[in-house]
Image (cartoon, rainbow, N blue to C red):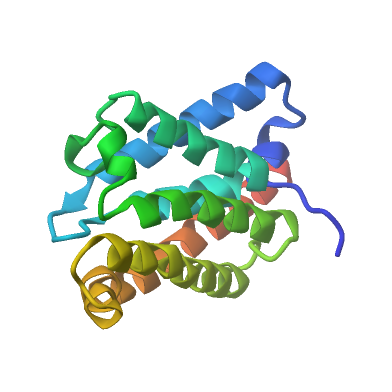
Length: 191
């Protein structure tokens, strides 16, 4: 399938190394902000972080989206309060949510691939694509939760997946609305 432009490419064109670094930095800030909008739940809080990760990937592309997540993880490991609830430190990358945090790299990359392959242009394609890749985030998340807590696989799925499924459907719809709306606005602006 032909390579398509991402929203960032369509909006600002080709980027220099500095431009790409700024996109990665802005993406990591968006993810950090999404993490702060949180409903405390144990062992995994409900946040807008997943939506932010998907939006960064859909708009910036696979490599820059994954780079933004890696920058976000590095910022948190260095002690910046970017994780849910203002959490910070390397311990977060070994705690109950680590499977989800590292899974965000693949999530952003996959969202970027949806955009680069032209799947994330219409509402339906974007919604379905985001719903599928968001569901795949539970693989590392639940497996890691099972590995480091006394929860069985079923218990980890009940604690770390089931309460979030409806929210993921809503986030997929929101992401699809934002991305398709942005493409529509860009097309109408260009005439």
